[in-house]
Length: 524
Image (cartoon, rainbow, N blue to C red):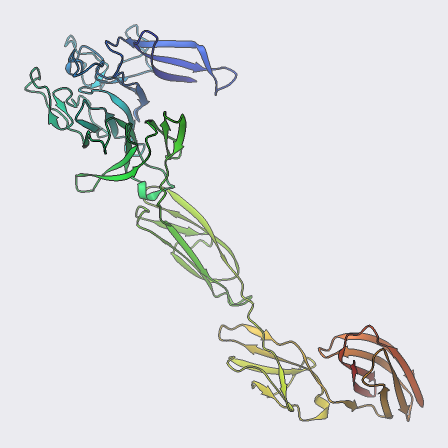
C-alpha cells in the first residue's frame, strides 16, 4: 500500500509515531503531505526518547520508548503502566479501531478491561531502548537498553513470548538492584542476557544491533552484534547450545560514534557512524577461507582422469550439502575431462556458496628421437612403444630403440608411446638418411654440384631408359619445400635456385613409378 512509518522527535520535543505514504509517481520518494500521526507522547525531558520502531514477524508494529529522560527516571515512568514512556509498544497498523488510526493486537498482554494499563504496552521496565531488532530466522526480539551510570545491557525476548516482560528499570540496572524503594515486591524482572560495566575501556552507551544471518561471513553467523557509542567496541552474543549466553569481543574501533545498525535483504549488516556521517558495512576482516576447492588435471585429451574436490571450514553451519554441475553430491568427483565444473554448497543455515573450478587438459611432452651411430632411440620409462617408417608400422619394433639395418629403411621415423596415465604420444618425425640412395631401375648416375652449395645446385642424371616422375626437396623433418615434375632421357641436368633456404641439411628426392632415389645436400 506504499505506507511507511516513522518515529521522530518534533520541534516541541514530543515523540511522534506517524504514517506516511510514498509518492504516487515514484516509490522511492515520500509524499510529505501524507502524514497521519498515529499518536504523540509528551517528553518531560530532552533525553531518553528511544526512537526505534520495527515490524515484527507477526506483522505488528513495535515501538521502543525511553523513560522520559533526566536522571534516575524521576517520574518512575518505566514501572508505571499508565504511560507509554519506558515501554515496548505493539500496535496493529492494518486494522484501525476505537476511533484511532491503529488497532490493538488481540493477544497483547494487558487487555483486561478497566485495569488502567495501556493496551498498547507489550513490555515494561526499559530506560532507553536505543535500537532493537528481530532475528529474521527465529523471530526473537533483541533490545539494546542504555543504562544509567554503571551498566549497559542487552535484553532478550524469545519468539512466541506472550509479552508482558518487565526488564527492571529503575528497580534494577542491568542484573543488579538499583532504586528499589518503590518497587512492586511481587514484580518478576527479566535480567539481560548480557551486560557490561561502564569503564573507560568498555564504554558508556550501548547501540543495539542485529542477529547476523548473512552468508558472506560464516564466522559471524548466529551472533547478535552490538556496539558502544562512546568507544566503538563491537561485541557478538550467541546461545552456546547449552542454554547459556556467550559473548565475544569482535573489534575495538576508533570512536566513530556508532548510533544505529541496519540489515539488508540478504542479512548483511551496516552501521551508521554519526561522528563521520558515514554508513559502513560490517565485515569480518580476519575471515578465513571458508571453502577450499582444488582440482587435478586430466593427463591428456580423452584420458578422463581429472578430479575436483571441495572442502569447508567449521564456520559453515552443518549439515552441509553439495551439488556439482555433473549432478554428483559427493565432496570429490573424478573421471573428469578438461573443462569447468561448478558446485553449490548449502549450509544448514540456508546460505548457499557457489564456485567453479577448472580441470585443465594436460599436454605431456612427446618423446624425441635421437640418433647414435646407426641406432634410433627415445627415453625409457613409457608403458609401450611402437615404431613407424613413413607412417607404416614396423612389426616387432616395440622397444625404446630401433636399428635401421637395411638401405630400404631410409625415411621418416616416428615412434608412438603410451605413458603410465594411458596417454598416447607421437614423436616428431626423424629423417634417417644415407648420403645417397638409388632405388630406380635405369638410373645409372645422379649427383649434385656444388655440394655444399650457397645459392644453386646442378642436378645431373644419366639414364639407361626414360623416366617420368617428381623431383622433391625436403628438410630434415620431411617437410616438402619444393616439388616439380621431371621427364628425362639419357643425360639430363636440372638447375635449382635455392638461395632462399637457411643453412642446413636438405634432401633431393626423385620419385618415379620405377622407384625412388635420394641425395643429401647441404646449404652453407
